[in-house]
Length: 462
Image 1 (tube, rainbow, N blue to C red):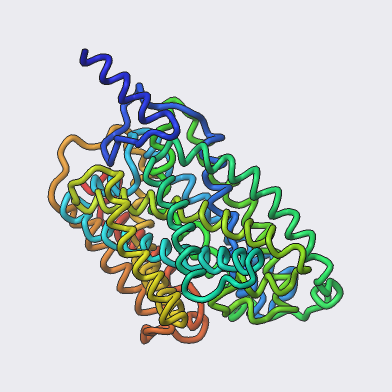
Image 2: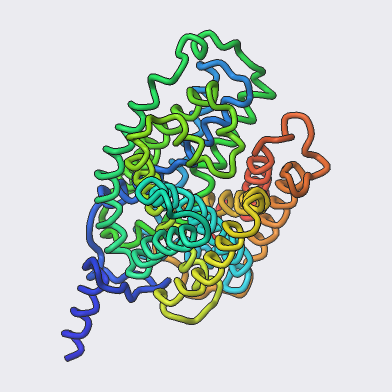
């Protein structure tokens, strides 16, 4: 009887359209399935996102030549870090922030887990807002009389239902749907890009004068790093923990890296070449509408459907991983129920922005920028322990591992001192640090060096 129940539970965790029962516990060997291709499609769909076009426009705003812009785009390879962080998940079967407890301690880990959760809920909210903007555009095209509060309510409800229901069902359903989204919206995105290319002044882009390498290329590169790989490091193992233990680590890293980089390269490059014609793209609160204005009228609905689908695909990962961060924080509830906690917060914030204060999205983005500066030093410490290669986990986790916690605190202070946002600017955020994400890299480097020096060659600082 017990064996049949275990087998049924295993099928529930490996079959789409059934609610996943695993939380932050290690996934047992009998539930391991799939291969690196699953991870590839998860990250491919998750990065078919209009925000990459905006990042490209931001890169162009630094006044760079085409060659310099390509150099800045090398920051997209920071997704290698996400792939590398997926290796411990494959080995131990645990999500990222649960693995973090072995490094920071059972109590010490609550602080980075809280930051991770808040960060993901914030991105959930932004994706809901952008998705609602896009779907409202669909409604306006199909039903010209549909506008105002009713259209906003329907749009927010549709996007929320799509993203949260798939995240609620869990990993197996996410793998299936991200694969479908990759093929469907990937092909449609190529079509949208082809429609936008004739509007680009290629000659002007080719002859655009070069900008400053220190005040232009370096800050632009740092922003690309922060907006791509660094923004996902706290979720990496969430999507590798179901892989069989024998999966080659190099394949995990390659699948994650190229799954994300392939769509990001195309969309970021599109943003760079479009920005010369549409400079407001880099700062608009509604980039969906800005891009819509560059397309022929008949292409409006297909484009908006692509925008909605790609935003939902990205939001699914935010919602799912935020639930795992909430469990790592110590909340005792089934993983599926964490979705409802997130829903209350992110839907409430999204509704506030859509109905009362669309300018508030800039404040929310500034808060997320500060949180990224807090997560960067954590990532450095996690990188050190991943590199040291502890494979079996630890049997007893103390409340606090002080080397990790103190290195993280020093790193985040350094990051905040050198970070500039629209909310606050650190006293050292001047010159090359002003308006860039180099402060994150400073915090990353300082935390990593302190941790390595303090702990020497021993794993977990023991």
